[in-house]
Length: 175
Image: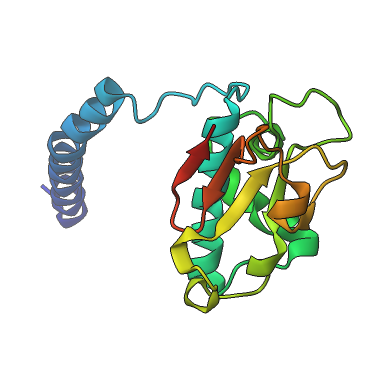
């Protein structure tokens, strides 16, 4: 047998051994991934949430913003600042915007939530009441990025209690 034929046989044997090794190593891993659904397509859906659920989501986004930026966002653009923190892979495009709306208020001009202007660009420890400060509250003020004094803008019961709000520490106030 010639030298070149022996070399091709050695190379062929090495290639066969390599492919067998790869097959025995990675095929079971790939099969496990397929069975577990890792390679399945994500089903995109529309977002449906209650006012309370949306307020909790907004609170979480505010905490993420606060932790990464060192303070709460500016009052004039608080919704614009946190909207990227509301996106999830399973939602259809633009559905994260629904998380900024209060479903109890049914109009395109009113988002239904407002940001306490006292918290604008402040760190939580710099707030007068710290974690007990109202952070976001239900309102009927028109527009996006509404911010102001909760005593003036919040929807309240006849007894003067907040209908729906969340504190800087994440406590829901619901009456």
